[in-house]
Image 1 (tube, rainbow, N blue to C red):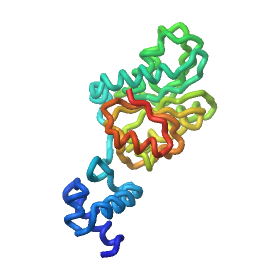
Image 2 (cartoon, helix red, strand yellow):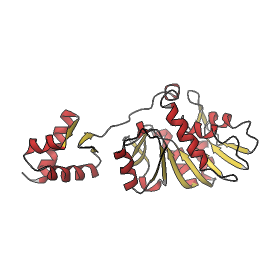
Image 3 (cartoon, rainbow, N blue to C red):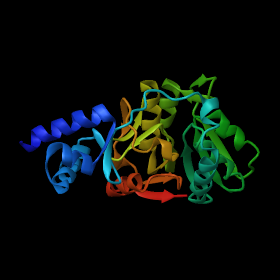
Image 4 (cartoon, rainbow, N blue to C red):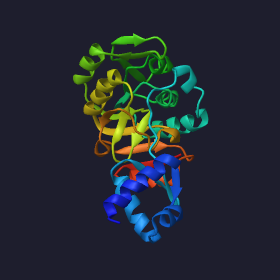
Length: 253
């Protein structure tokens, strides 16, 4: 059997069973495990399957985001750790962007004692968290209010971001893939995130382990645009390694 045909059949097998081990595939196709590992490596590079310890699973897709209220109750301890570490990367005197989201909100909670800090955000929750921080100047981008999440988005948001330049941008996401980069299911939210990335010298993605390795419909930015990733210790070692191999510095907290 030619390698191309075998890889096609491997895909069909994994789609049918959702996962498979190397030994199962070797027995199924009557080849050595080393051959299967080589096939899986090549298939994974195409972004269709995801390698696991000893096997492979189908890539997982994110087609929509849960509500803000629901997300705010998920992985709260992990998000708090991520937020605390992200805040430790901020220096007094910095100009930064904080994206809207439940993970990024935890960054703001740990910035209240900074001084001479400027925070640009499209999130009213983030701005509210910092409203009494005497050493922090908050700039809201403006834009259309999304009442369910207190996020600002749209043409005015995009226009404001085009005129700004900051040291760091902390970006949240529902889907982050080592090959395909930062992704999002909702097209109307993509331009603002892209504007934040263009405005910043350093891009830091903050996300809990459940978003790692996920695919979604729209690409916000390639993996090459991301400098650092901060995620929780709950993340699989294989996910961490995949992002490191993509050239992203990974901080596990």
